[in-house]
Image (cartoon, rainbow, N blue to C red; front, side, top):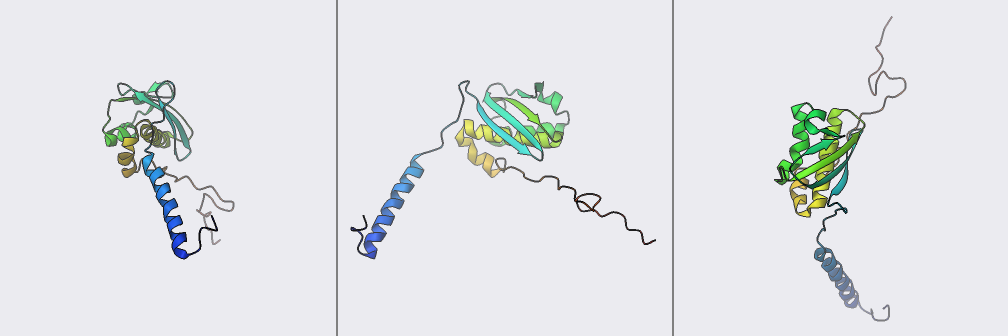
Length: 165
């Protein structure tokens, strides 16, 4: 190969030829659905300290979190709204059943983790939904976590009360 390249033009033709091959293979391979033997898509979602394992399969829109109905587990309507956001954005309300197990954090973080997991699982089940979910920002993990407490401080940054005398 080194014997064939004698001029700069030869080098350019070789490089452009390899780029053309690389772009053909990238564009020719669209995303494939990822499903298990039961026809479910699986993903993990995270928010704050909460981690959710989420399975999505075609169904009637039933959402089960830690063995309970979503309305029983997330009693506040705001949390239910957060969990249902991916379905509304993707226009697939009532078409998928969700089974989720979630641990860690509080209820708000757990709702965000389930939302993240549902979004990731939906785009794995049907790759055509990816653009809508990505545009809404549901595929990105919200990485904000509570800052740790430092020694010599009352909290993470708050100092102890100053007393002049």
